[in-house]
Length: 480
Image (cartoon, rainbow, N blue to C red; front, side, top):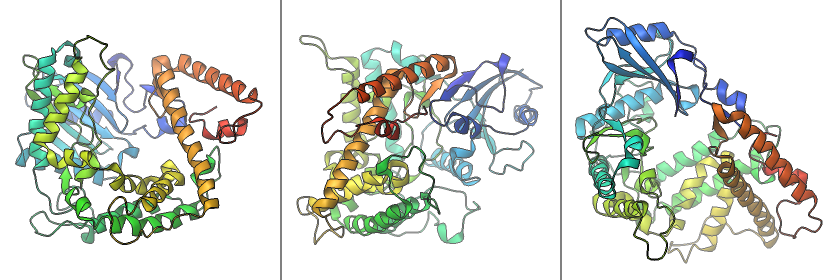
């Protein structure tokens, strides 16, 4: 999340960074036209004894504009305004506030108090917003580097003691929490006090329907679109074939047992956790609950927070590193405090992979989900499923074409990861504003260097996915 000094604060435009791909579209989608003075007046009204605002710090995330206000009576207040890309209008804000209030009522998770909110952009401010108290303590990402190893371990345990309270809440169905008067069709609502069994097949229908809804109504112009992406018609056919597969898989007792409806934080990383400055093992706040939802527990099994990711292995005769110790602490805390979430991590991931890809075929390209269906059909008996797989294995000719497209898909992902690492950007090409010119220049130099290598390779292997300039441009992740 970028920070904008007050001296050059533009409350409307995104200014923290630029994108190497679709830069103008990305920045335009983060522009918010609203009445900043009205927001300031509302903040003062919500702070008894305050007459004015003395400072304002603007922070920009991927989905929200955030303003940290300090009033003349030293009150600190946070206002969050969602970008249009944050989610469905009205519903995204409504769900976040409902989730926060539900957790504040049913757990001891420390979440800053909400002072005011609106999911109606026609209000006096001109935007949906949430105004809340500033979290107590200090951000964990600031405190983490100065913490001793034992402090980090105790902090991880404290985090998961709080997470346990959330995971232990039993829900009757999958979906998002909303207030009862949320602008939803009545058929989509379900009150929490009703008793019924979770319907995993219906959840699978929802995943497939989401995938179908993301495909455009008409065939788009294939501008710089990789060959493995697939036509609209091909996506629709594959998704309907996949529907039968995931619904049959969902009836397997192992998958049902790993699919308990579970509420979890969508981005449990150091930047969203606050701790006591005196004792960093005391959790004082967990923020950013936007897009929290109740999903099958196995959906969270692969999530590893940044404070638990292991670093490089220690050298011979070297003591265990703090990162290794934290990774072990995370494993132990997950296993004993939230086994509902950690349990699926110990199972064969092939049991869950089709569920993870079916709703995002238009983003990933058709080849990723097709690959999962092929692998599932080939291993159906080995994985222990009853009966026969509803997805028929491809012919040898179809399989050869798929394997070629899948190699290209893998090459594209490897290229994106390598470029992001070398250029020090996010995976979508985001780079801080101050690094933009140097990053853009380095990016073009890398493309030219790789293009030269491709053009001078006179005898590429038959299975080489990048044979000429057209191949390279087709999988290049950023704009050239």
